[in-house]
Length: 527
Image (cartoon, rainbow, N blue to C red; front, side, top):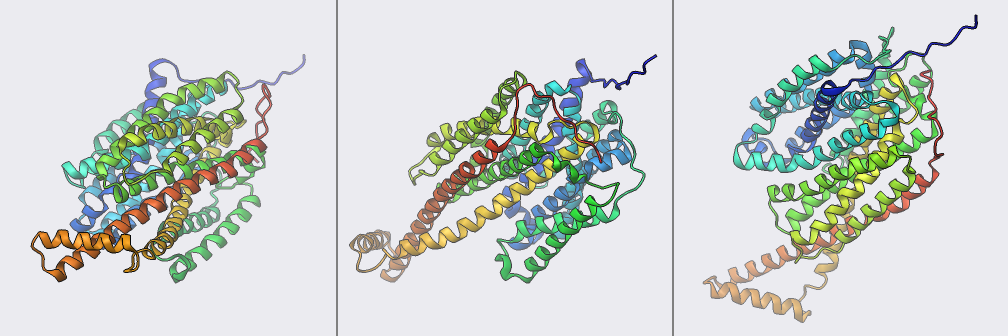
């Protein structure tokens, strides 16, 4: 009798169990991503409360980002080591307990420590949540799974600032951490009840400690450089130089180590898959675009247009809702076999249109001028995100899928950090350039500026100020006008440069992606 190869049958959750599992996973992912941005709008209140300087308080954000990006690529190994059920539930517990301790912190370094711990728990939630969602669907429905996860990626960073602003304005900064606790308790119970171990998971016989050490050194140092570079004037700082050297040597040692052992902590051999490598690059650009625009718009709105933090955050919510509505549509198109390259290019062009419209903002711009552009942003990101997420894990199964998900999430987070750093550098230099140009027109020999100063002086004199005080206030008013206008021009050019960069970098990469309709996915060997 001829022997037949028995292919193990994979079972997928069904009914209420499936949707409770998905809801638990996506809630945890959103919670983790909200905490990447929720603190940003509250830093001033936190620094005043715990007596920290503006420079010191930045560590509250940096500590979370560093631990987060370190743990994300290791989640697949840790999930197999402890079992996905135990690891995911433990991550929820760590995140929730650290949130409690952050809210109870009474000094800076206590808060920084617990933010670091919170990032360890949060990093475990993000990639494991995506693997749980993807694992709940058969391969032909992977686009639907990624559309669901994509909604969480968009909503987290978008809702974070508005939620943080509202809580800080109406309660106190402590509650931006305390609100995680009831959600975390419910999520922990549901995770323990419904999450299962990955089918076919094998506990690693050996742990690649050196690989983990090199990864921590490389990714942690790189994230620190990207987070702190602007405030420390980049390579003018010996601290930044030291961490840059550690990042480079750590990365080289990590890559060499992972390619030369049989039990790598992170299987970077997966990048032999051409489309996975292309998808990872696009994921990097997606992180740059997503976090970069979330970073630049609040600054633009609050500095140049005078919006409040809450007003800015609330305004960005409709854009996230447009993405949430568009995601299932895009997922359906992919499931029906539409060319993902075409969908991604449409998304790039829509997003490019958003950035070009934003680059023409003026001092008279109001909320009504930005509604349509932000609808474009929401739809454009949906058309880019779902195909890119699918591309980054296409053809992978089991452990390879979990590894690729961890790498994709790490790369997207690093893309966001690089995007924010580059935009910061661009804005710093552009502000100086525009300011220098504008000040050249404010002289006694320019009738327009001298008439404006004289008019302002008269206004202050009419209010009872002395001649000297009126002149000082007039020049301060001119200074304020120059600052607002230089900021506006810089942000406009920032939007323009991001748009041009996305267009000229991403479209050629998309065209290089190999796609053949109906071609079966090609799995990649674990080793």
